[in-house]
Each structure stands twice: as C-alpha cells, then as structure tokens.
Length: 122
Image (cartoon, rainbow, N blue to C red; front, side, top):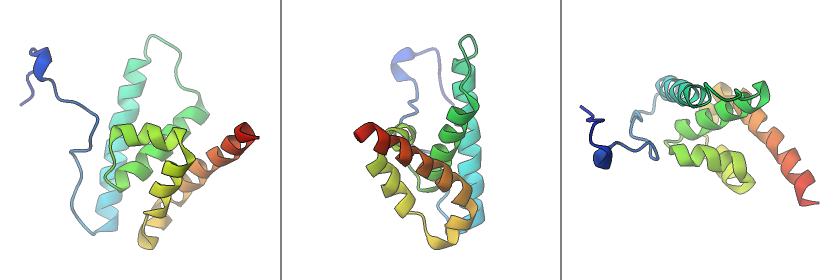
C-alpha cells in the first residue's frame, strides 16, 4: 500500500524494485518489457499536454529501458545510457550471450547513438 496523501513519504522511482531474480532468460525479458511499458506510459502521461516524443526518441527510450531493465538497472540508469556512451557500452557488455538474441534489435538501436556521439566530439 502506497499512501499518496503524505508527500513526505512518497515512493521514489529512481531505483529498480520490480526485478525478478531468475536465470530464465524469457522471464527476465518479459519483466523488462513490463517495466519498459510502464516507463513509456509514465513519459507519455507526463507529456500529455506537451509535444509527444518523436518516433526516434521513443525508440531510443524503449531500447535503453529494455537493456537497463534486463540488467536490473534504475530509472536514472536508463537516462544515463541515453546520455553517456561509456555507460551505454557498460550495460550492453553486461548482457549475456544467451540474452542477446532477445535484445539484439534494441542493442543495435542504442549503438546508433554512438555515431551521433562521435560527430559531437569532433
């Protein structure tokens, strides 16, 4: 039970408390998909009165959330993966070989960000 009337005692969303402790790749992936859907819903709800995310931005956010959630990362880590190529590669490198086939599309999407990072560094 979460009491939303007491603002000094609200639950934070800066850490991952919904992870499933299992070695089953499919269960972990399904859990990451559920967490990602919740994050995307939260972002959409927050942007309801403003402009929505572009399709490309939405795809990057979904990819980062899936990769981070699959490794039990926090909400903050999702945004760090989008911003920082070192953290992004750290998360990608932590993905086990038997998990990569489920996340390959999302990893590829995140690696697109590296091309943009390199252009900015020149």
